[in-house]
Length: 395
Length: 219
Image 1 (cartoon, rainbow over the protein chains, first blue to last red):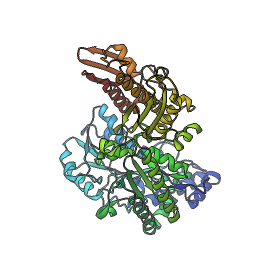
Image 2: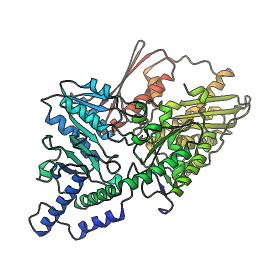
Image 3: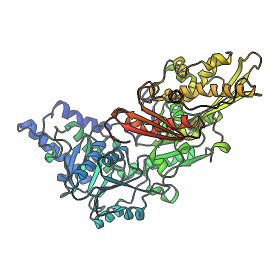
Image 4: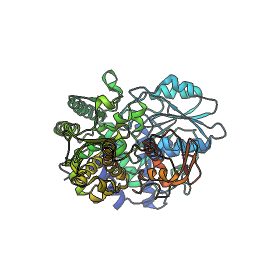
């Protein structure tokens, strides 16, 4: 069955790279020591951990001491926001996020609100770009943190992080960015881009699941989330997941050594897909396009097929061996349409009809062409049975 | 979210029965709306003498289970007397499909209620029932709230014990709903579903819904 699957949900997770898996295996069977142990096996693990930390740090122009390994992007986001909110609570209680954050930022901010913090959301335009003036107007003397997603997971919008970081520096406010989707696709320089905290992970780039990093700029303090041993400079207790750490480092090396050629390939496939799908009548390409296409993550396409519902499209494609995702309420766990799509101005029924396609280096032109053909058939089929009457229901 | 649909559900989704529009239909109804993400439209031919549903077809805007429940519902009611159909439970379409994931149970309610709405319109038209002038009582409210399915448990929110309080005060209706921590993620959906069903009463009451967490927070 795997042979036939066309996997276009790489924004969700990816297939592990064989080289990465190979690298990891050694740390289960041979070099299985715990980096905190004092014996030979432990010391060997500690050295390898330091190497991995160096590799990840270099990939974003950070220092190794600024890298904290976590269980993934959700933990990194939670730690960053909770940790800053708690540590700086005497300085202020105001946090600014964007209206298109991932749930692991949005939910934490929402809970902090219940705990008495003030949270403001910055608006985005119809392609998902932060309104810088709106951001500037949101700052208060009590603002302690700004968190803005680097590259959006749904519509691929790449924010002008350097500019947002500069605004935060000028105001003397810490800046966190969730770069889970952007890392491994874009060159990131935390120093040049004025980033104080950053979330990244491995499994979006052919690395293992369950491993992430929180970059914390030297001098920035936050309350630790896990307490216990002295792992990760005491900031995150718990034995390091060495196989995953080593896999992450290898995946990062591969992603950044082939960055330009990979990006050229996946954005080429993405554009081929989009060109094919835009031949279908009554569709909208959501997110940056045209002159702004270069400010879109190379692997991402998000399209609304009007007058039909996304989960039905997704299920039909799945039965044909094609894996995609949808911003429809019916395909979300909470039965709400994607807040990213509504934030860029889509009506609920437009969000319900959206499908996200995310490409990886393992996809081929043949797969893209087969996908276009199948989507055309499915859209036609569902429209033929749709009770949605554009004249009656479009207002 | 990986959804486990039964083979029968997939079969009705990919090969829906009674799809389309009945020509010269004498009853029809549309339930749901595109904004909610699911909507089903039925056209029926009901024999005015025998009150048997002689023909029924549907069109659907919705997810796989919306299509499948509407499809099986048409099979369930075709050839039946309208009084028999009026007595059908809202989960019968789901049962007939061999069950639906809890988060999809509302599709069964929509599919069955859509047909009942068409029958009600038909009965009004032939003068079999009068235009409803619904008196809003707590019991009537509870009956309406029984159409709201809990997305986690797949049973209605009344039987699931989420309705903490209902009060009718003149023109105002107050409803307090409480959710366990593992139900809080559905707060917004439950709120919208309750609103949608109450608005379908077309009463002039002011409706106020408060959703509370068991841990004390407003959601």
